[in-house]
Length: 334
Image 1 (cartoon, rainbow, N blue to C red):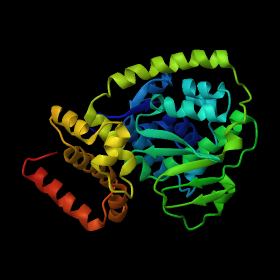
Image 2: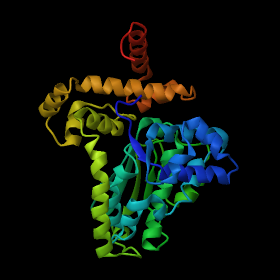
Image 3: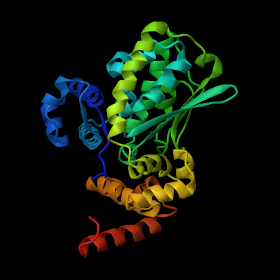
Image 4: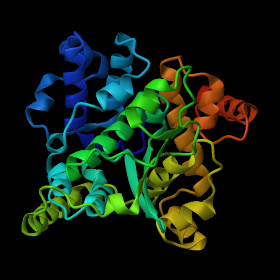
């Protein structure tokens, strides 16, 4: 279990269910596997636990034998399918403004992912970070990258080709479908998922820019973010969320985490101590929780789990896993 389960709009799983149904799968069977009922989708702006979305992806992946499932699912939705956030992007002034709004209101869509827009002299990079349980499935990441590329074209009305797409997943046997889908350089086994556009592309106006309407949508989005932030304001939760971005292939540490949260190391240690925790405890608990998620299916290689959790080598993961299981057996952490 997550310490505080991240949630997301039911719009995401609803779109995945629609695609699965187009492929001949039964919605009721998929919902049974992920512990959801169809009632939740009566309101597409209701929220569901992200763990249910992970289970839904697993169920669809098990049923659809498609090595580029993520690319294919990312071709279907349009901006309006993402509700308030999609409309706020649609009525932005230009592509750059739209992507800034995506980064600002991302938590409305999902608390388990994060978009960061980094501006360079001649380009802008949108980075996508997700919970390791989603990252391990490969297809959700690739679907997100495809959605972002198509959204840029929909916003500007131009057939935009990004400069580069970076994926954290291992290179597949056949990379041709990826080059055909993204129509640019595609790099695999990267630290994070990212898509790069030129500065000229970022300045392109959106086809439906409306300053007055987007100002109103900003107000609505700010109101929608409020209740989400109110329930997720503990330092422990903030550290766990920051660590998701650092785990895969890296070595998360308290200095990087403090910088990410905009506080000093001493302040971070003090706040965690006030909550009866510490950085090492939060990191260890997060790794343990994610390990349970990844091992539940019994399909993820141990070497991959070690990478996703930021261990320097598989042997370090094995030692941690033995400690967790020993503690559980002796009545320790569960």
